[in-house]
Image (cartoon, rainbow, N blue to C red):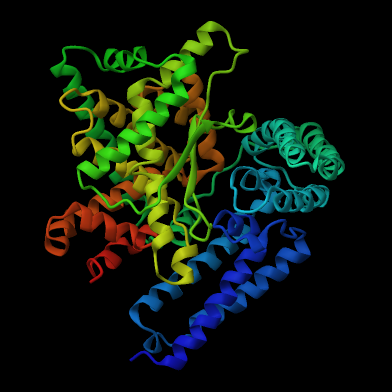
Length: 543
């Protein structure tokens, strides 16, 4: 039986674990809306991270010593979430050794986006935090050079060089923001010194890191299996996950072929037809804004999931510094942010492109795919998901833990859900667009496992995306390269399949067949690891 003294002691331990985690990841805390961490940057020197890891070991020991019999069921789940959080960070430090082999781990610390786009505090306060971070960039990158002494995987170095080349435009935007707030003079000096440090780091990567780089990047089977556990609480063999992903790929391909046969065209012609129906360049963002309104009303009319109020979504062009890596994205409010405002970014054409390049980009923003992207990013996807997260009355652990497979799995599932509910019917276009994106996510899962456990080359992965997902060579190669440093891009399909499995087993017996009750309960869980999903849902909706 749970005891009050045991719960009180666990409450204090939970707070200690979260505080310790945020000393290593203050940027994550800021993204969640905990702005007492503004302006902080972790000390990534080896001495500091070794000390942090030892303290994390001690906290894991304290969690292991907790008598579960003294905790209610919900807090037992929280204990597991705290364990995964610490073990995940220790995996990154010790087993994957990200700070010793991945220069991107350092350059990511220069991103200042949350301070620019979220109006959570007066601009002058946000500028103060920006200055604090810029002043710490030289030390951050110097620590990186001291730690990255061994040969680094070549794809890591090449992407890091590209990231470093793109950061000046980000810092331009930062300085422009400060000038708009009347504080440009306090940012200029730190910005210049940060830029000089970035330039030195980039030159070092180019002159020394790249020539010494190696083609090896794979985690290997044991570490890959361990990654599945520390991120998602999964002990399912990755071979079984690969089998499920291949089956989903086959189902999607068969359905696409069936639609093509019904319309007496080839699959290639089916996809080409979508690309021909795109908005003009000046209307891409307004079209996305209209789709936000339409998708919100669709969710409401079909009673798919409740929509917590108020709803505040801005649709804007992707900032210049983010355009190389993003077609569209959603900056959702964190669970602790003071307002529910979200920003849906859509990347416009580059005026410097040739007419042919501009047309190619616009074809990728055809109306069908842009609508599907909006479903994924806004309603009922990411933005709606995070509106629910803000209302979760649960523990600190549940509000902080963020499973990538749950987050991306929900948004990917939302695309299929919308089609199931009749989006675009009776025409097949919406379903074709949804399946095209599903093929991409299926191939990401298969590529991740192949690259990291089965000796796949980047070229073999590229061929997978070209032949199975109908991608042209350039975007297929970009997807393959992403898999070398981001094995967790399995998360879209892995999470979607977990949600579909839970729905098939529990919708009727536990939720009386009500999709809204199922979805509201699902989103009310926070962002749990998908390995816990069915166990948590079996309790049914809150009474």
